[in-house]
Length: 387
Length: 155
Ligand SMILES: [Zn+2]
Image (cartoon, rainbow over all chains, first blue to last red):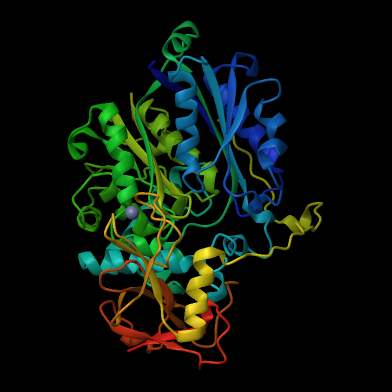
């Protein structure tokens, strides 16, 4: 397989509502990524598009709707979908387009316009449940997360303060992000603990906000990066993905086995045998604060049940030994499902190429890992990148 | 990268309301037909067993996900269920606040792969993982062959 680099990233503001149509958001993100790479669409051989359920935007087969804005006309163009895992999965699809030798330069665009969905994007999640077994009980999506969080906290005897500390860290980290929706330099653990209870133990501030937004990346071969005199390419060192059963009663919710399996594939390729020592920082998927802890453990960045302690001791702060979500994450920047690519793989690219500005980790970082989590809460995609 | 601030008030923008019209009829399927008929007629909760994989599935399925063989050995679950995880829901499926918070739980049975998610009829303060509970059904004759034939689980 050929070496593959990321050479440009772009993203729109993440906001509760944007005026831009899905197409217009895609175009803005794509244009920014091309500008950063110093390229034009004519340099691009193929386009990958990623988005979560059509029902958010309310446009069936939205991949076709946004095609022109992504530069897909007249090119090999494909939409990939792994639900919430798409944010890290579509860069993986771009990776295999290039690593295979089929294409030299690929543009990846991810988009979500959740505000179109009325009265709330939550209404769409009502239709992901099994129509026979679950839907007659009228479940609310937050319940799954609440029960998973409860199981995780029960098994490891985790204190709620240590979970809430993740939300505080990420919302503060987001202060340096120009696209952030919920950055708050003054938020405290008490603010999170005193926010409205949605489904105990989940409080409102434990949850990332639904957002509109798009993001884009430019991915290319080593030879393409050389001939186009790209200054600071960041390399894909390993990719992996894995899925567990859709019956969430079949899984023990305390540990994301699917993520551990996905990480194993990526680490093998990246020749990582001791993630805690060989990885300098991480962008674990954080739609909920407890999920960052869950994902740190699934990624093998610490032992099972150890992530709350690392958080409490400041190890995961931007200037700590293992910074997590230096972007501000979904909790701070926002959660336009697939478009979170911009703060996951996008943040790895910006940090590893020294372009993260105010958010730049103060010490040298050479290796980063990120994951996304999705499908029906049982899928993870993992990317390891190196400077 | 360049960024511009923009209006986030959609009412100030030209916009229109629309919907994606679609209605559906869902069948319960071959396994579901048997599971719900048994629940309605005898009040028993059936699981399906794979001899080769030594796994008993709840909800029961037509096939084994491990070996992809057909499942024909059906047996009722025995003993109480154990609460594995709980949530106390302050918002319903539509994001509204119910008059009283509702307790929901993941329920498991000994020796069974899988389990059920259902309501728990205990006060929120007593809703704890580890609790042993039994299903409480609608009276025979008023059951319709639906998951809501189980009203809730209780100690
Ligand atoms: Zn089997």
